Image (cartoon, rainbow, N blue to C red):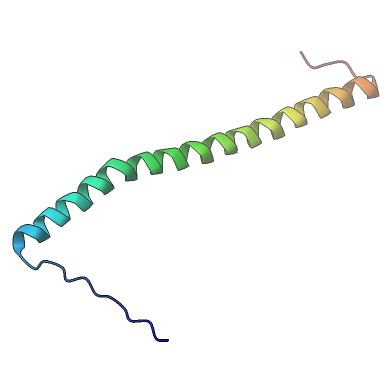
Length: 75
């Protein structure tokens, strides 16, 4: 049993092309900035969290090393 591909005839008038272009631009203009901002926020938040964790771990390790070795803090 062979499957046939059904081709839908698209209108070729200038008005229909303009309307289709307008709808596509409307869709892209409405959703693309939101998607880009969402992704940027997620990446920035994750990167900030990782950097903060690394800095905090380094600070705590340094303080514990000073405490264990008996050195006074540099204040």
